[in-house]
Amino acid sequence: MFMVMGMLLFGVLSLGLALYWHRRLAIVQRFTEELSRRVPGEVDLSGKQKYTSCDAYRWVMRNVVYGDYLKSGESLRNLMMNRTLAGTMMLSMVLGIIPVILVFILFKSFNLIGPSIVLIFFAVYEIRGPGSLDVSNKLLDWLMDQEQESLTIGDLAYARVSENALRSWRRTLVIVGVAALALAPVGEAIPVAFIYAVTIFIGGTYNFVYVPVASYSLALAFVLFVLAGPAILVVAIMAARTAWSRRDKRDELSL
Image 1 (cartoon, rainbow, N blue to C red):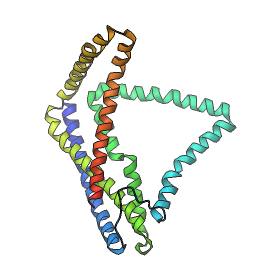
Image 2: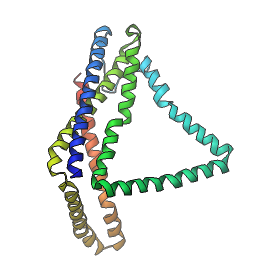
Image 3: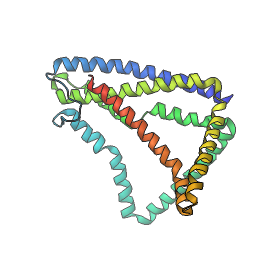
Image 4: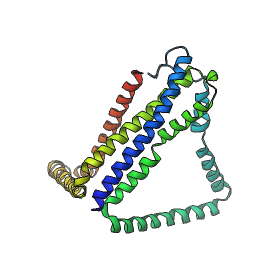
């Protein structure tokens, strides 16, 4: 029951966030269209043209390449260099306590709501969004606050790339939301189906990989058996990312 309700809420959340980014994208599109009419020339998003003499590039260098996170890292590095003993004790306490607290929370949450706890992590990720989305959104906010007369074709290029990032995230949210709502009626069967699929995969890997290879080399068979699952997962993730990147590239070239 928790899984069905969780899938429904997750789907509604995804579509709600998609609507939010759709409205945000409408504002951004009006801005980029006005800027493209004012700025002469055509924007090249193929990667061959480098736009390094614009305000947007300087913003990226100042806030992304040399962002605030480097300052926090510098503070930690100074602490470890100047007060090694105190810094080591503080890190040991933090790294020792946090995992215990997290495991306790996860254990209690799993006992309460079961496998649907995974949806909470997905929901938090959707609300926060990927890092590239946050950077793109902040860059667009900054560009829209500037005087348009001072913006150049390089700024328009960065705005277009950021706009494409928002559009891609909106599309992802719509797909995830529709899929979650469609699968909600059978939500309770999803964990069972997942475990069943993992069992079949492990059994197939054992029968068709481990046993034949073990007849030649037991050590090699063990390595292949242990690495087969993660390797296939990594390949699948890389293939999915490549497919999304190619689709985004086609969207950029069509502008």
